[in-house]
Image (tube, rainbow, N blue to C red):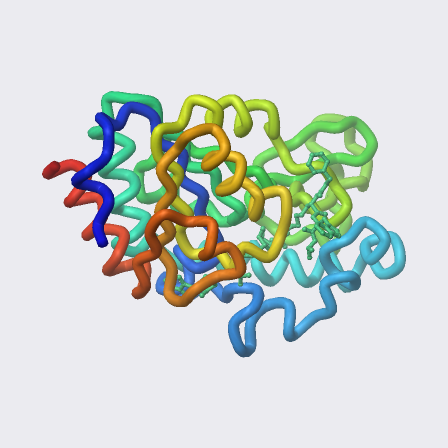
Length: 239
Ligand code: BV8
C-alpha cells in the first residue's frame, strides 16, 4: 500500500542514511557478509578503549578506509537525494551515519554527519578538526598546533554523536522521516524512527532487506538503493 498519495501536504523531511546507500559505490557496509566489522572486532577498532589499546591498528583501519573512499564515486541514490535537496522548497535534512563524502560529491548541501567524517582529522591536543585526506599512521603534526595528536574525526562506540540537538529539532518539525540503507542496529540513530512517529511524522524505509526497525515504519520498500531511491524521489517531485 502506498501511503504517499494519501499524505497531508509535505513540508519538512528528515532522511537518515546508512552504509547501504554507499554499498553500490563499492564501499563496504558493516554487517553484510564480509563487511567491515567481520574483518575487525568492533571493540578493537571503533572505541576509544580500542584506540588507547592499539592506536596503530585503529589508525591503519581508518587510513585504509579514508584512502578507499577517495577512489569511489556517488551512485544514483546519492544523486537522487542531491536532486531532491536542490529542488525541495521545504525543510530537508540528510542525517548520515556514513563517514564518506558521497552525499556532498553528488551535490547535496543539507547534510549532517552524525558520526563524523573520514576526511576530517581531530586533534586531541587542541581540538582542531582539519580537513584530512592522508594517512595518520605516521603521526603527522596537527596543522593548528603542531602536536602529533591527530585521530580520525569519527564517533566511536561510547562517544556522543554530533549535533544531536539539531537532529532532534529537525525530527520535531518533520512531516516525513525516511530511512535509507541502514540496519537499525546502532543507537541513537536507530531510535529516530520512533521519535519521528511519536511526533506525528509519516515514516518510510528504503532498504535492500528488512531491518531491525522495519516494524516501526508506515511503509518499507525493498530493493537496491540505486533503484528504490531515485524512484521515490521522482514520485515525490512528480507528485
Ligand atoms: C552513544 C562511525 C551516548 C565509525 C559508527 C544497548 C542498547 C542500546 C544502545 C546501546 C547499548 N549498548 C551500547 C549502546 C550505545 C551504542 C550502540 O548503539 N550500540 C549497539 C551496537 C547496540 N551507541 C553508541 O555508542 C553511540 N553513542 O550512544 O552515546 C549518547 C547518545 C545520544 C545522546 C547522548 C549520548 C555512538 C555509535 C556510533 C558508532 N560509530 N560509525 C565508523 O564508521 O568506523 S557505527 C556504524 O554502524 C555506522 O555509523 C552506523 O551508525 C552503524 C550501523 O551501520 P549501518 O549504516 O546501518 O550499516 P550496516 O552494515 O549495519 O547495515 C547496512 C544496511 O544497508 C543493511 O540493512 C543492508 O540490508 C542495507 N543495504 C546493503 N546494501 C544495500 C542496502 N540497502 C540498499 N541498497 C543496497 N545496495
